[in-house]
Length: 158
Image 1: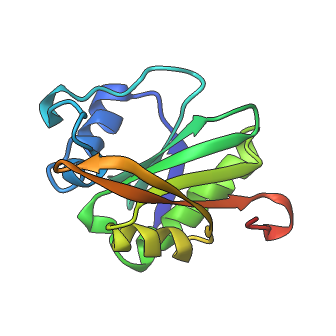
Image 2: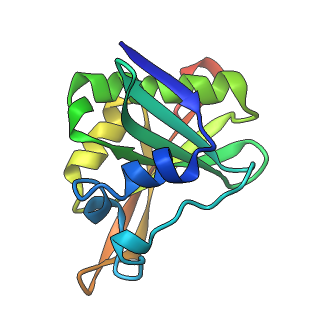
Image 3: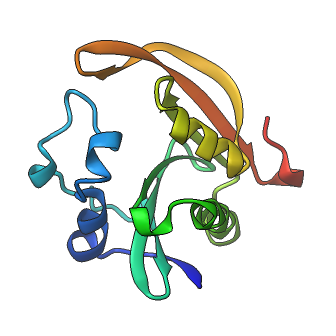
């Protein structure tokens, strides 16, 4: 059984998930701090939505406001939730934000080389709406980022 809830437990839950060695290399870029030094930004404005599988921490979706209704999501999932459950968790987190926060649009940016993350975002209902050229630096190489989004109204994605 999957559950999602907002968390303010910055160290024992959020940091623990993000700092997992199977997560951090995929969400960090060349200018990110060392994994051991990463800390969650502590702010009421940022919505950390934690997903649990049968009560066990399985991931966190970080929703950062871009304005009063548009939030950028960053996804950190542990291997115990990969596959169909990950897609279900993404949809649950999206609906939670639409139901319990001012959010009306969710966006994300995926480096073009990260095909798994791109397919995941699309399976969760997001649609591509643009490309941000040469905007992500990983291993000394600049990469384009695919821009995706989904809106609350009528299941609209544009």
